[in-house]
Length: 376
Image (tube, rainbow, N blue to C red; front, side, top):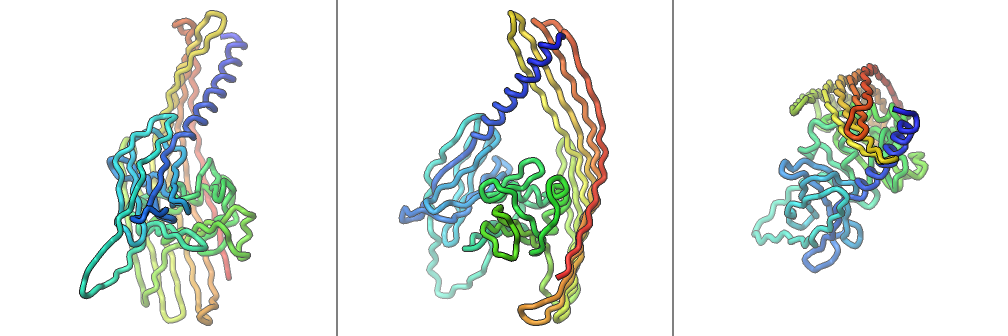
């Protein structure tokens, strides 16, 4: 195959890939939620769920006009769940999303909860998403669909948050400042992404999304995402062990142990998680290039398997001096190993006749570890 044809292939492949990405990004679902008086249901929680297994794909909240939108939705079948304090939870019909298609959902009208009882007992139950005046809270330990997921997976479904490559974007696509228990994490890029992948949702109680943080954080305009690790507020010694396992073509598993000791003004806590996953990726593309009455066909097949084994841990403690002051420390880190076995085959045909083929194989072996501590 001559140099001109190869160069043309590279240029066209890049243009087509860029065009395909732009088209996918335009695919989405939008709609409007109203109350019983046909007023906008501001701050109602809207979740996009996969059909039929109800897996959480993304979540958002309605704006002041009751509108919501999910962008960049992959083709497939989905339905929407809407919840708001004082109203019954609402589920929509199934929506089939096709490539390059933006769906406008039917207008949703919420029905209020009405009870006529002589004696009322009020039991507070936290929603997965809480909207407050200064922040939005994800109650990770209240979400069944978050089980077995990494913190990075949880953030990818959070309202207003988008994970692109190794960057966590928030507040209009700006880089977010990540904190753990209110302490800034001094990592960025790939190191930060590796840390968030190593932290399992079973280690986390809440995630706070703070669009306009106080001077306590130096967020540089991108907002703050504060990850709050689990700790018990009960007196005495507590231990909790959780396990999750998922299997399909490959598998993933994790085991987490949380420890906590509290006595009067002293609190000690820690956790350890082992996570392992084997994830396959398959990518097939077919391209035709027409040039000088010749049809050049490119058939590309890419296969890879990523095996990840990770150990993540944290330990900390604090002593209350006054109701508003305490002295504490936090130590956290991870040790990960990642192996990627991949092969790529490109078959090139001119007018149906095989001209050449390119076969590449490779194996990437990485060991990643990170340790952090904070005293306050």
